[in-house]
Image (cartoon, helix red, strand yellow):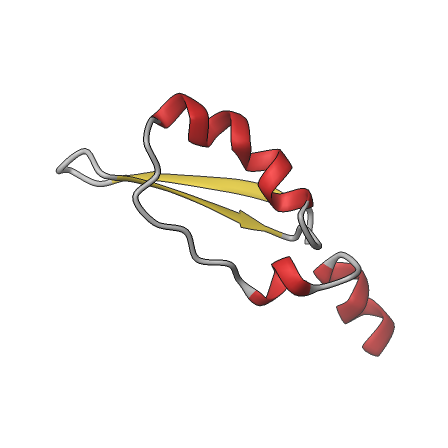
Length: 64
């Protein structure tokens, strides 16, 4: 899986930024410009990918 950033905007104007395919804190660095542009953050949830030491796609390929 190629790393990507998904930004969702609801009809009510609420936004969320989700990273996929990043390992460790690289996801925060990649999404920071988008988060800053969208305004004040109301919550943050770290996924298991944040705690990974290698890209998720690479780990999956090595197990296959």
